[in-house]
Image (cartoon, rainbow, N blue to C red):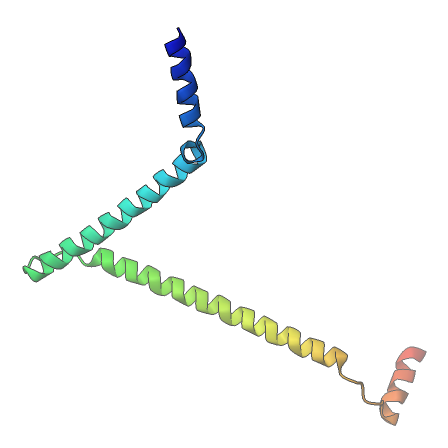
Length: 119
């Protein structure tokens, strides 16, 4: 029985190590999955390159679709960036207009204001 207790304590001690906690194991497995996906993508690219070098034809529609998606993403990002820049410029103009010293009203403008307020 003492052997079981000793084994149980040893196992608990080993499993309590921070690297063996669930979050750490999940992070490690996720990193491995990402690395595996990258390796498969590289392998696929090498295979396509080898096929092209050997004169084997392949369907370019997938590449064209991916290129179209990339162009669309870049265009959308550029549009968003320009919109943000325009909004920033408009805010700057508004702030400078609000903080700029006001010129005195001309006599005609004063009379116009009196007429508007009199109505």
